[in-house]
Amino acid sequence: KAFSDIEQNQNKVFYSLFWFLNLNPIDNTAIQHLISGNKEKASEIWGKLINEKEVNSKNYSAFNNISTLYLLGDSKEDLKRGITTKIKLIESENFKDFVHTVADETFSIDTPKQIELLIAELLTQFKDKYSASETMELFSNCNGTTQKYLSKKFTEEPVHKIETQIEQCNKKRINNRSNAHKFGTDLYRNTKGELALLKSIVGNATLQYKMLADNIAKEILQCSVDYFNESQEQEKSGNYLEEAMKLAKLAESVAVNDATKNKVKENISTLEGMKDKELSQIVEVLKSVKLMYEDNERKINQEVRDLEKNDVLIKLGHKSINWGAVKDNIRNSINWGNVN
Picture 1 (cartoon, rainbow, N blue to C red):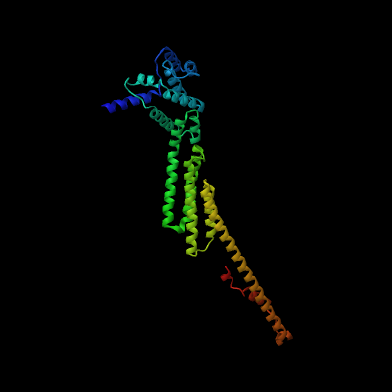
Picture 2: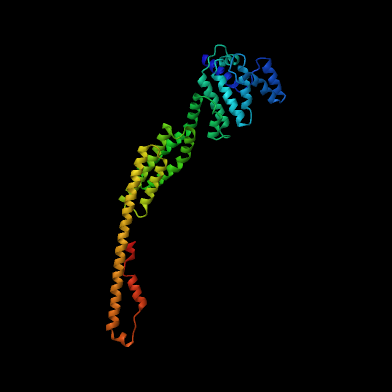
């Protein structure tokens, strides 16, 4: 019974915050203007009681009524004023007067909880209408406590998604290092939007953002390392070094803290060193192939000259050199398949 009474009183307070109180002749006059469709006049009447004033025992109904009227408006400015005014009422000492007007005299309100309930309801109303940044702007005139709760509400979902993506990528990478390049790339793509949203809400200097961004970067970097090492062990063909490099650079673009950035840079530097070494080896191979080709060409041409000089039939003009065949012999003197 006691719990039921509390819940009933809580509901009375909650729903009354979204309606109008008619407690005195001024409220009654304003409400009559509303009924006749004159919202501007109603707003003007209540506005005189609240503008540049604090909430007191005589104007708390005006604070509630005009904030409800603002919340029913179509413009962002009206919504912003409605939110600010409504929360100002709830945070005031005289909110207890409002509570005892709509609920039992013995009912005691939990102010922070009441604000959270209000915000949760407003967020539900705004969900498909405004973006996160637009919604945050509607609450921008509210105090730090409200901002903190709002930030928490907005960050819960992207934080959960990011943490889930990191965990899934980690498991996939451990079980299948050969596909770590794909897993790391997917992690970057699947968290890019959530990370940007988080940045717009809490900024990139907060501990929460830094930790999540760095955890993404670390996992992408580990995908790069595992993919490269596995490809080397399996002696894979294809440009796996370049793919590992691309992953490392994705990690670099996400990393925030210096320690993580430095670790990524070290790996990039290592890969670049390997790439330079690989290119040097290729150049040396090509040089040796060129020398071998030139040597073969010289030998074949010398053989042809010797033939022209010593073959009697050629000298008498009864047969000739097949220069097409000579060129083919020179061209095929190298096993180009082995060079590739």
